[in-house]
Image 1 (cartoon, rainbow, N blue to C red):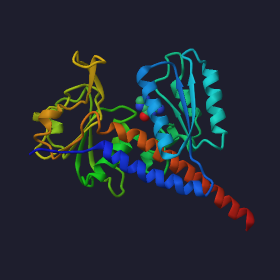
Image 2 (tube, rainbow, N blue to C red; image 1 turned 180 degrees about the vertical axis):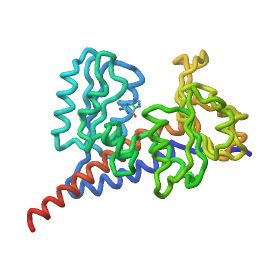
Image 3 (cartoon, rainbow, N blue to C red; image 1 turned 90 degrees about the vertical axis):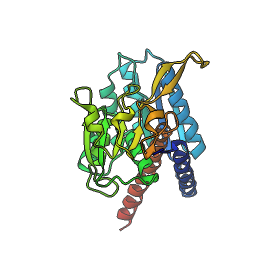
Image 4 (cartoon, protein in one colour; image 1 turned 45 degrees about the vertical axis):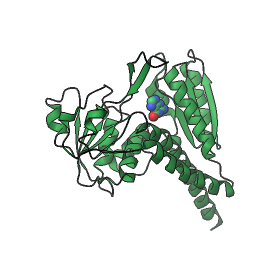
Length: 304
Ligand code: GUN
């Protein structure tokens, strides 16, 4: 079997077109969704992510408040900026790009973000809501993976899903989201990691394999059941002298071999990657809509 390649760029473009139309409708009601962006330091990968986020905001019509701070910014300065954004009515979502420089306390910063503006879904309040199945903000990469599956027509309900990787950003939240008792979830999930005894034994049982280990060639063709769906969340730089920048990006999956055995597969780049930013902006628009709903309700209550 040769797999159908899931075009994440196209799925993301479709979702962005939907968001753009929604933002245009909100603007008719005088609502402009806003995203506050904070980047501390000069990490090149973080800089390019943040630039891409701001560019996509502009494309969709979302206001973005861009804050690039020097690497030596203090915890107090960063906390003060978060507090300012918490209190700014023009900002519906706050994004603090991670990782922060070593001297800064990441957990304290994430905890300071108003959970109603936590469009990354990293605040413990939103993590807790996700686990118990309440409405909060879902983290962007795992939510993007689920959207890719749904929009490709893959059945999640009842599927045996094996996730390789247990990070707080991908593996753990994805497992929690997929076991929820709700439509397009209801999967049976196994989470594998570096201490898993026989990884290939686990992945061979899977209808859907999600690789989020952060290591090239973690998933090879012999580890996949014929006709399985393979989603590659990995983004790894490998040296490549033929490239001008000296490296190329590969995922965690041996794409060329696995695609001959799978039914669906995502490429790297161009698979899960483009979905992450899209889901961030989806959450930002959602946040603006929720705020408006709350204000409308308050107004109705006051006029009763
Ligand atoms: N760094 C890498 N991925 C992410 C993400 O999804 N959100 C934030 N804030 N930082 C990141």
